[in-house]
Image (cartoon, rainbow over all chains, first blue to last red; front, side, top):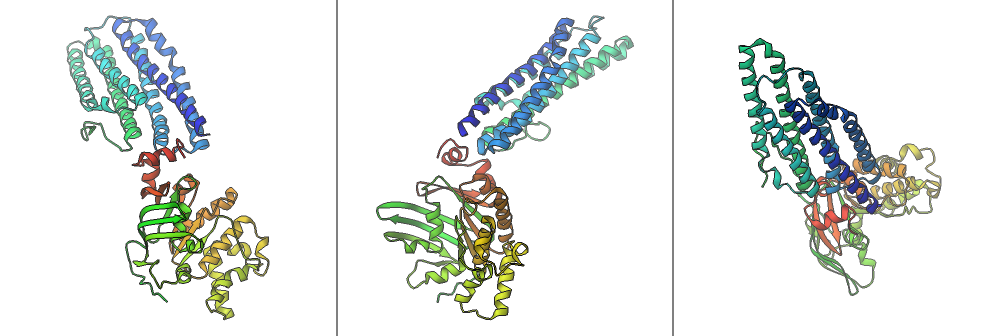
Length: 225
Length: 259
């Protein structure tokens, strides 16, 4: 029974990583679609909406089944708990990607009123955080979280700078208000995705070390050694 | 007769460098364990690791085993119970025991419980009635048997028999109750009743339980000790042991990777 449990856990881990890779891919492509005004790419992101929701539900069901059938302990229990929380954060990242893709299609009928630099930069940082979190989960290695707090801080600052910049453009030319508001929303979505990546990192830290940490820069610095 | 000072010590039972041999077999090796009063302590570990041997040291049940040699100390209320002149029977009055298989006497339910107090010299019917009533109530068995106290105890279900054995142990007003896998021969419903009872018992008694069921240890105990090959590997709060054990051996055992 124990071997069966560990086989199932190995399989579940693979599925979580697949789900994480899909969420990251959706986010990265949604911003790419926005930048290049590529509706086909945005449609691809929208087409994955149900897929990520199904993965979320499927993994959740398997997690609950494993808790009931095997009543795991220690690192196994922490890993199951981590997976249970992780999939919710990953599903939310997928949903934000879907929202960005929708906006991308909505505003694709007119060119960007300025070259998009900060939003793709934000996306790059956030996708990097998700990627690192997934590797850490796979390898049970927490060393990648050392600068998560700083990276989250950078994302927050970028969001604020996008907000200020868009505000300036909108004051100057009311015709760009629709686009500007959408950019501000997208920046906000990306900032939330970074928060979710931090939450995932916190859960993985707990899974590996059995201790809770807080990566949110507004409360305290990440105390990863 | 040895008098035990029932003070408010931090620990009710303590072992110091406890070693035990069955002939040449070194069954317990340097066990140091401190147990707090009114708490449930679970002893876990693979078969043959020394859990039952250790629990049997606490009320000198190993005395009856030939070739059993003990070195080190077991303190009960700060008094070494292996000191010369200590009466094992007195110890067993204060430290009761419940075994794996329910073992009621082939007598009536009433007589099973009244037996111990009678041996102690209590013969007053009214007093005995009170003890039986109180013991059954404390063992959560009273409502199920109150109308058939004179029926044979052998007619009770396994779970009821086990609670009767607990009631029998409580009748002589012990301080500590040792339980050696008390649920291993019971069905899930009877097991749940015993587990609920353990939660109640710790309000008045200190409970030390040996169990192979780790989920049970996690559910019922406040402290857990993991033993392996006669050594105490880790001892700590149950939550910590099952959520985040410090020792690799403990982790391997409770996650089923070993043992």
